Length: 424
Ligand code: AMP
Ligand code: MG
Image 1: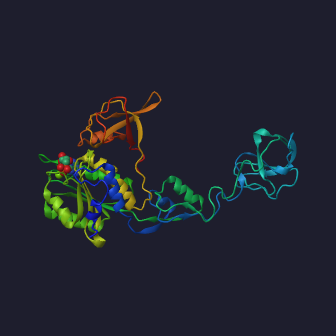
Image 2: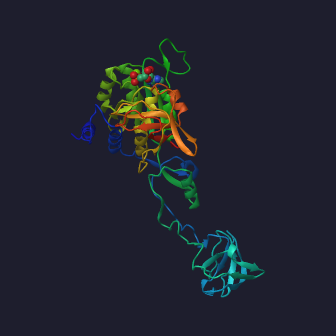
Image 3: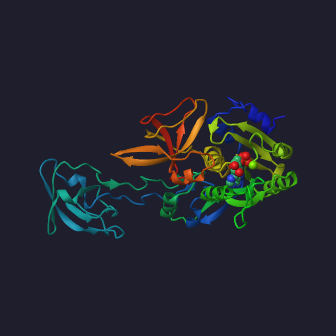
């Protein structure tokens, strides 16, 4: 009734024979939901994990009213409206070492940045503007009540969320958690992702190549991309283009993992039995994405009930694997991992100095090198753009993303780039 395939076919703009990149990304994100399971971990172990519940601040941050500057803590009421006021220096307060006792009328206290404001003081005058000699401090007029003071709870009030559930924890969050005095946080369990490569021409490293064979590289790029995302990895190796072997691999993957990534076997002209098998083992949609590289792709669910897993059937070409991974799979895996909200990878527009060959009607993801010249960021395409040429990915530091409606790009035209740096 309300099967997965029905829900997929109800999506706006749904045309499995020519599906836009954004439409495919949306369909996938709309259908999947985060997996269950969470655990407490120590702060350092939380790097790269997804926060399972809000971190509530147990205290005010900062904990006390404190000085934002090096200077003198004064009572505003003591200051003359016109002309300078001479105050008596009653003591010094350092960060971490408070001045005991408050200040009385006509008194001030030397205070360092971060020092707790002594009782009675309500204003800090910066040291550069006063004349200090022995215990006499002359303060110029026109100070403002409350200036240069950071208020207790100004950054965070006790009892309010410091970090929301769904946040992928980065170094800043580890520091923030520690700053609240918390030693542990609740994170979601790591997503388990299984993958295997299909193809009779594939050879695993460590075995000599026979005629017509190529080494399987996709399992290594996938390993790297999944490790960067913080996934638990189940590598099921190379599987022959043999129905029984592939069925067994799918069944094992669905039992052991939350998501399965395959490479190869989804293109037109590939052995049809793989598609047939995917359809037999679950509900899988086969798409032709309006993109290059990465046209054929399968998405769906394999297995049943507790042993089911999401399937991403990627094309076999090594570059297409990486491009489709970042275009669809990354965001989907982040959502399954509990990241909320999932933000698309950032893009920005720069002039392209090389011509790009491009046919209107599909998105293109070309390998580019972002560089800085004459005070401006620019991009050039890498020498080779073949979708089997991993070296082009290795030379590149970004993808040049050309919109579907555009044709050839002439040198000097602006294009969107998506930097690789910062991919989790
Ligand atoms: P396919 O999508 O299976 O037709 O594969 C397209 C191209 O990618 C072919 O040239 C394959 O040999 C190559 N290819 C497929 N899988 C892999 C892999 N795991 N490692 C390296 N190359 C591959
Ligand atoms: Mg193949």
